[in-house]
Structure formats: C-alpha cells, structure tokens
Amino acid sequence: MLEVNDENPARRASDLRVRPTEARIDTAALAHNLREARKAAPTARVLAVVKADGYGHGAVMAARTFMDAGADWLGVALVEEGIALRNAGLTAPVLALGGQYNDYELLLQHRLTPLVYRAEMFDALAAAARERGVLADAHLKLDTGMGRIGVLPRDLPALLEHARGVKEVRLTGLCSHFANADLRDPTATQLALDEFAAAKRAMKALGFPLELAHLANSAATLDLKASHHEMVRPGLMLYGSAPAPRFSGLADLRPALTWATEILHLKRVTAGTPISYGHKWTARRESVIATLPVGYADGFRRSLTNRSEVLVCGRRVPQIGTVCMDMMMIDVTDVADSAQIGSEVILLGAQGEERIDAGEMAQRCDTISYEIFCAIGARVPRTTL
Ligand SMILES: Cc1ncc(COP(=O)(O)O)c(C=O)c1O
Image 1 (tube, rainbow, N blue to C red):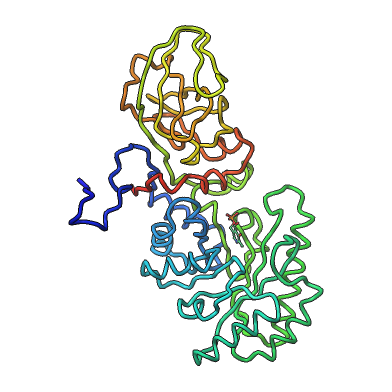
Image 2: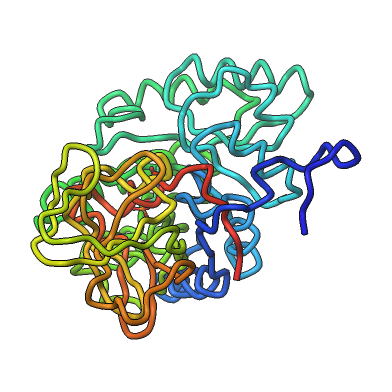
C-alpha cells in the first residue's frame, strides 16, 4: 500500500491510485510488434520511435522493451525526451527527430544525434564538438515533399558543399519523412523515393561517411520495400495499431494498451430523464445509467459524446450524454443484471470476445489513432502487465 507522508516525501499523491482508471501496457505485445517490424524489413536496422512519451504508452518502458526485443536505435522528437531516456539509463543510439536543438553542448553531452539541414546548424554543432574535442555525428534531413523540416533537394548541393568544410561534423546518416505513405496514390511517395535515392548517391559520390539512410515510417516499413534502405523508423505499428485499415493484414500487430476503469455510480432512471451537461441525451425507456470516473481531461474526447461505445460485462454499451472533464455516463440497461459498482469498464482494448481499438475510437471522433494514444492524459497511470 502506497502512502504519502512526511517520512516518504518522494511519493506523489498521484501514486496513491485512489481512482481505478489506468492504461495497462502489455510489454509482450510491444516486443512482438518490434519483431514484426524486423520481419517486415529483414535487411534493415530498426529505429523504434518513442517520441511523445512512447505514443502515450510510457517512453522509458517502451524504449527498454523495444531495445530488449532487438531494436537498434531509438527516436524522440525533443532533446528533452532524449535526455529523459538517458537519465533512465538507456544507452542506445538516440536520434532527435524534432530538428530544434539550440544547445548543441547539451545534445553532445547526452550523446543524442541531431538532424541537420541548414548551414548554421553545421556550424553550431561543429563549435560544440570543437569545444568538447570530439567529432559529432549527424544525419542530414532532406525534405522530399513533407514540407516540414529539411533541406530541399534543389538546395542540397550548396549545403553539402558547406558540410564538406565542417570537419568536426560527420554526416553518417541521411533521413527524410513521407507525407503520403499511408495513401493509395503512390505518385508523391515515388517522387520522394527518387529524390531520396538521388541525394544518397550524391552524398556517397562526395565521400560522406554515410552509414544509415532512412525514411520508412510504419506504412512504408509494412508496404514499401524500396524505402527500407539501411534503417526503418516505425512508430505506430510498434504500439499495435495499423496506420490505415488496409495495412492491418500485412503484419500481426497486437494492441499494447488497455484503457480501463470501473463503474463509480449506478442508478435506475425513468423514461424521459435527461443526462449530463446540455441534456444532450434523454432516456427513451426506463434505463440503468452508470457513471465512470474518467473524462475529457484524461483524453476521452468530448467529441465522442453520444458517439461511442465502451465494454462492460463483455458487451458493447453506448456512452451517453456530454462527456465531462472527469466523468462520463454510459447506458448499461442491457447488462443491468450483471453490471455493478466496481465492474470493470474497458474504453480501449478487449473484454471477453469484444474489442475496441484506437482506430475505431479515432474514426468515431474524426481523428487518427496517433492522436487518441497521445491524448491519454498524464493523470492516467500507466501500468505494465
Ligand atoms: C520523423 C518521423 N519518423 C518516423 C515516424 C513514425 O511514423 P509512424 O508512427 O507512422 O510509424 C514519425 C511519426 O510521426 C516521424 O515524425
């Protein structure tokens, strides 16, 4: 039993776990999915993307699991995220994908590899490397149609010319990112592949010590062999979700996250009884309504109001009435014989024969499964199975 008291100030109140709402992470599923990525790209190395707190699953736990399962690199967005991995004792190579570094000394101190794509980034990294008396590895970021960060192909020759004069920086990688790998139309993806291959040839011809060229996200890892080069960079698939329904048959992906809670309150209401803010739901029959201790502040989106289902007693039941900040209601009339205060309720994951996955929840509120995972709030404890 955890206690918060003066003798144990390190314990946070949130560790007490009074509320039974949690995200259970199946580490065996994460490890399995990593192996599926390796199977899909057998000749490439695998960089496991653990940015955004491991897509909401818990970055340190996910990173450890992926490394134990055979990942070669880890990918984060922020320098801060990379340092958090180092502080937790992870020693694997870490690529900082976000493209904002500012303090290059901090980057070198924690052995994080940056993406460089402007002349002054080479100069700043070189200055920090000189100061430390080391050579700094970096990966060149090419913009092949994402339009986000990276050097445009037409500006590449000038940047490579500059890079040749910066002796403290070793360009050991070339990197890009697909904008459309999950779409059916291959036109933009083929253009990206061609531009990437041309850049790789140019860098090799100029004698850069290029070891790793990489641009494949989950969709391309699963379905585009030509994109694998020396390394793939899957994220979403490692957490058990396919980037679009058409990819789900290409690997055995196992959802790793179960979002669970328990019934907080139960009541029988007469037909005509309205429920929650704005009275956007009214009972059409005598109904049994359960209240759950979870709401939009936990990441159960308010736009799911009256549009989603949860699992109770092995059955799907509707969410009803406006989702509140900390609570929401569900209609358990059809399972009234077995639902009780304290009955387990699954928001995401499986119960009995039923399953609700992030793709389904995303579709119901017009977003993508990435956002569903990332939105599960910090106040929902992550536990491991
Ligand atoms: C630069 C970069 N590489 C790789 C990934 C992984 O993509 P996915 O989660 O679709 O596999 C992402 C995710 O957004 C990314 O931004």
